[in-house]
Image (cartoon, rainbow, N blue to C red; front, side, top):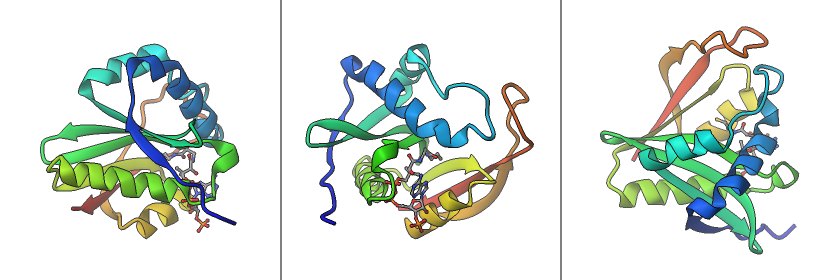
Length: 158
Ligand SMILES: CC(C)(COP(=O)(O)OP(=O)(O)OC[C@H]1O[C@@H](n2cnc3c(N)ncnc32)[C@H](O)[C@@H]1OP(=O)(O)O)[C@@H](O)C(=O)NCCC(=O)NCCS
């Protein structure tokens, strides 16, 4: 199959509702572990001044998104999302390559992200993208938690 070509752009405020829909569709993957939706428009508006939402489009359709937040020399990546019907087609890999280029150009020295420890498919995915576990594990708050888990942190030096 021909790989879909992802076109990247920075989000605008008018994209907020589409971002919320995309992220919540993608984060159904967390539904075995966490109750309810991942984010709402207020949440995106709160994040807005802290970083940059990068969007990936295929044929003009919003297909992927990622939030980049600078924390000193480290870029924290959040809400990594690919439209569920399009997952497993290489779009997430293109999204990660694009965000890496963005982070390098912005002068960050490393990228960092975290995910629920039970999600071994993410461990595989991020290792393939050059991330390695930092050894840091964080406990979630008790709110909305369905089963015990912790967050695993991974880092990629740039
Ligand atoms: C994780 C995610 C961004 C990867 O994007 P993608 O377009 O599916 O990724 P690619 O096609 O480039 O790579 C596929 C790899 O991603 C991983 N993966 C994670 N979730 C997957 C899914 N639902 N379907 C297919 N692959 C998935 C697998 O490791 C797979 O590799 P494998 O063939 O060795 O199993 C995407 O699956 C997604 O949005 N998942 C739900 C939201 C989420 O969990 N985000 C990360 C939170 S930290």
